[in-house]
Amino acid sequence: MGFLLFSGTANLALAGAIADSAGIPLGRAEIETFPDGELHVTVAESVRGRDVYLLQPTPAPAERHIFELLLLADACRRGGAERVTGVLPYVGYARQDRRTAPGEAPAARVMADVLATGRFHRLVAIDLHSAALEGFFPIPLEHLSAVPVLVQALRERGVRPGVVVAPDLGAAKLAERYAGLLELPVAIVHKTRLSGAEVRVRQISGAVRGLAPLIVDDMISTGGTISAAVAALRDAGSESEIIVAATHALLVGPARERLAQASLASLFVTDSVLGGRVPGLPLHCVSVAPLLAQVLTRLHDDTPLEGFSITD
Image 1: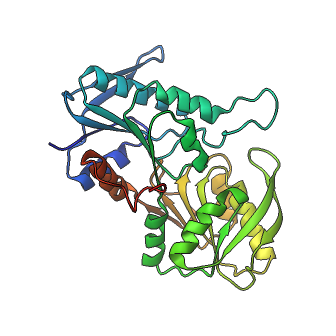
Image 2: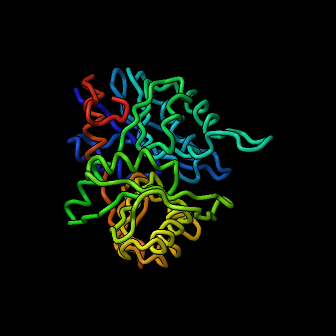
Image 3: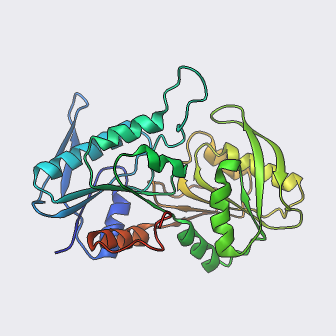
């Protein structure tokens, strides 16, 4: 008997694509909001004795999406599910993984503690902002990477960069994964963050002059980091046509305007969060549905995730 897949409201399109790829129907769940703002969740089919997977990325409003996931998990446990796995392609609050000033709350740790109350058998995530986040969770977490999926999309589009660029030190290991698959050198942009939306570039480590850059990151939020890196690369003499690849396309606030002004040759992202076409941007959305379908099938069959999990 195969596994069951249910979805919260954060990305129903991705859930449907995963179900199609796995050759299973998407489970029926009803999620409604009462007039007073309270959520009401019903799992509308039997889960007794079944292996259940709940898809729910947690972009804004993260609090609602997390609570939907917890209510779905509780309904499945009370319905007699044998195992319940939370599938969070994008994990919100992941950037707040440490205190940088007195009085701050490390929100990533709080978020991990909240998710633990769902009593999941395990969690699945894609390209966490920091691999150290795995240690925040008291339950097993399978950390997947969309890098091979995005690299394949680059190749299919005939993109041939000359250097992989990390737009900050935090993306250096991610850049190394891209560079390993593409057999390219790595350059790193050193930045100073001025605010949540503004950054300033200090220098670039590595050769970029005369080369076509591929800027890579785990997410694009306001676009400040990417736009600053693009400007710095062109000032340093790189080729003017610049490609960007990022797993999670949040594209909030001034992101669309900034990326449009950057005049990118192409922007490759995944459907880990619900997006859509962005006028004026050369956006290519690559689905992670086949990746997740394969991983969930392997988890259901209790087979290794070698080649899929970053930590395997």
